[in-house]
Each structure stands twice: as C-alpha cells, then as structure tokens.
Length: 185
Image (cartoon, rainbow, N blue to C red; front, top):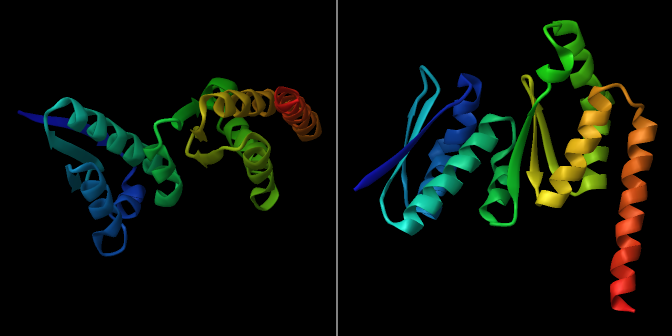
C-alpha cells in the first residue's frame, strides 16, 4: 500500500527544498526512505512511501521538515526536526494585526529587529530557531522552549517593549538554572 502526504508551499521556497543539484530533496528522500515529487509551477509537494507503521512516521517527519523549509527555515535548521524531541509551531501574526497591512509590517519589524537582532536575541534566550516569513512566525525547539518563545512573541506582537520581554526571558532562564542547580545539591 502506498501512503502520500501533499503540501502546498510558496513557489519561492521550491528551490530551497530541491537544493543545489537536488541535494536537499535527495537527502530527505534517502534519510526517510520516501519519494518526493514537486510541481514547481504550483508549489505542490507530494511525499510518498510504502506503508508500514515506521514509514508513516518517517513520512510525517519528512513532511514536517518540508513544511518548516516552506516557512522560511534553512534546510539545516529544519533538519533539527529529525529529533523526536523537537517540534514545529507556527503562529499566524495576522491575529494580532487584524486586516491592517501596516500593522502586520510593524509587528514583523518588531520581531525581526534591526539587522535581525531581535529574532536572534529571542532565539538565544529561548534556545529555539525562529523564522519570520510572510504572515507567520515559526519556531523549532523543545515543547517547553517553544512555549516560552511563543509567550515572548505574543508579548512583542501586542506591543510590550523589547526590554520588558528580554528581562522576562532572562528571569525565567535564571530561575530554571537555579532549579537545575538545586537538583544537583
């Protein structure tokens, strides 16, 4: 029996999923023992596999990696999803911007920061990877890290200052470090 998953991706991300000389597509196919076909005219990606329980899990993991790449992550960062501990979360920031394109641009600018500084700081303080692409903010990391990053992103989206958000994250980081130290005593 053949099992398939289809994903529509932005056309400008097709080349990233294929990779130079097809190397990214081939790496995903080899690693997960699946076949990938890509319709570059429409951005349709179809992943297929012979069905058994392991193949379905591999197919779903490969689909999650393709989905992450389609949301702006580099293939190297998306491959962190191979670990069963890491997950992908996507936040649609239109829920904070409403129908205002200007507000959406302003929120994205706050999340990215000057030369990407805000995004990098959020990544460092939460231990996650963050991609801001289109109207989505995508996060790769452990569930507890993603929860923290999501909270920080939400705070920035509703207008909290960067200083407030960073201090919040640093406080939680210190508290968690202290709790780990107590476990070792």
